[in-house]
Length: 184
Image 1 (cartoon, rainbow, N blue to C red):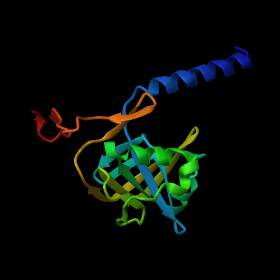
Image 2: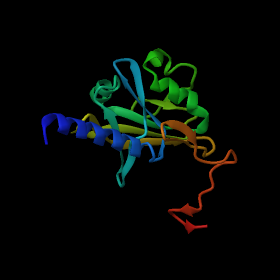
Image 3: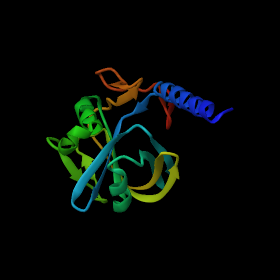
Image 4: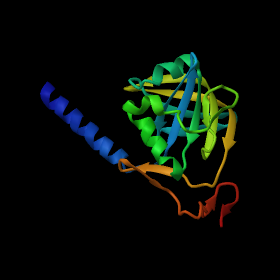
């Protein structure tokens, strides 16, 4: 395969991968940090539990994101899980031109790490960076959870096929399967 053909094949594989990944529904989170007196944050759908003992999770952040370096320097972050009511906030954190408005007109609190925690977020995971791993264009940040917070009704926002949507009816979330109790 020629160099040009390999480049075209790689670009097509990347486009196909991105298209297929848009079909994988995921929760919508704001990952925030605080460094040198400033709050930073970004929208993330790549958030995963790693371990319950000790409580550990991971987030993935593009190395070109403006929050990347402040998060790594600060060594702290909070994963704020969003509800259906936070769509405007998610959009604000997604647009570079709204960077100066990201933390405006919302109630933010601090737990142990000092990273901003959305007071009315579905859940907040306050973390200290334990380890980072560089992979391709992103950094995987593994965090030790030092505190959690939950609030409000369970009406999560999800991201699928390039848009934000609701995961449950307005009446709330009623799972058919509970990992602790089983079906029912």
